[in-house]
Image (tube, rainbow, N blue to C red; front, side):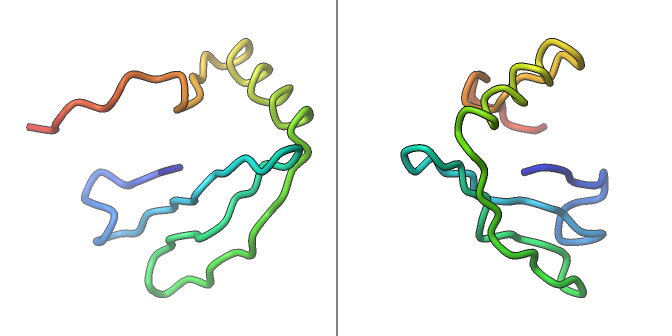
Length: 76
């Protein structure tokens, strides 16, 4: 999930996408968007460039890629 409002994803909207690696390509596809929005097309990125951008995000903003995160805990 890329973003979700405080109320819930189904209420105000949410943006989520499947991110898959296919050899030398990273694909973003199968978008889930608010019901009144148009789904974006699939996007493909070069794996090396994608990894470089992830490294930059981690070093600049402290963003941690999801594949390096611990599983989420249950919300109370």
